[in-house]
Length: 380
Ligand code: BDR
Ligand code: CA
Image (tube, rainbow, N blue to C red; front, side):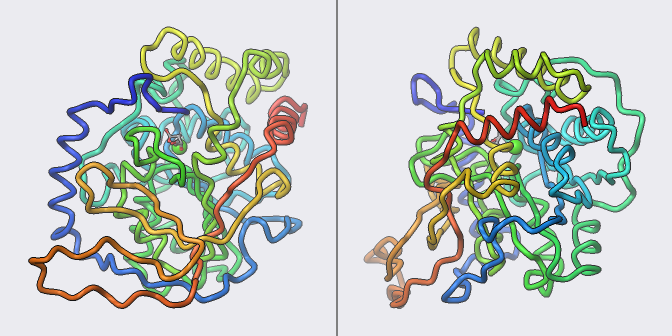
């Protein structure tokens, strides 16, 4: 969803909470936030490397209305073997994102896919939600029956770790919520990173934020987690607001979903109709952007997005800018000048350009919507 307030003024309470925890974040968590740059050339294992016959993925998500479309798109696409769905707190608290993930596998008729509960809070910050967009239940306020199935007993971090360790080099993580679960498993098992085929994530922006002028929502919620993921050396694809703001849902798209005869199509039509109405009545958010399904769609059809090599750093210490992503296409990757009173000298600048992510820089919206609607409304 698009979160840019009409006024461009973020909620003051959120800013206060954010700045206090940003100050604390420098001393909490025991994390190394130093940039540990990835290899000079990125392995050709990212989402643009051409679709393999069957991609084995774990979907880490905070459903969330656009997450719902992303999950159903993944579950209804034969290009994927969805190994697990892991829920994280984000758009709404974990009790809702977890229940919604369970509901969505039921709606898709895919109760063979395990669903695990993940983090209920960001690594070191208070949880900020986006129920003003996603409704208080995360599905646009549309009521679905309680899920009949239960989450597996493993936590999100445990199941991610087990699946990847059992098939090193084969599993990609598709992360479309705050990166708390992914960072948690990377911290818990420092040897895991080289075993992950790729991380394809929705988050970040090189062209301004949607919850603050600087930050995209997923990275705003857990900037420390995002930083850990970018520093891990795993082949990364970042699908940020630069492209997701260009795929906007219309009433015609919703009508097409409603005309579909399967439960996934019907459910998404109801969710998106309610969301569109909420946006129209609301003060702040005005458009419905397809952030998360775009991220999944490009793994099916890599011609939807154009990707470029970047070295991306995530801001974690800013009073106003935590979660901002700064992208370099050149070296040296300079940091801010040190204060005159600082004890430490400026760190040596990197002399070689060492990208750590492929960043989506252009999108073909028509191609995306064609795929999305075909997959969600099909009879299969
Ligand atoms: C991201 O934030 C969430 O609200 C959406 O689900 C998407 O993952 C967009 O900034
Ligand atoms: Ca999401």
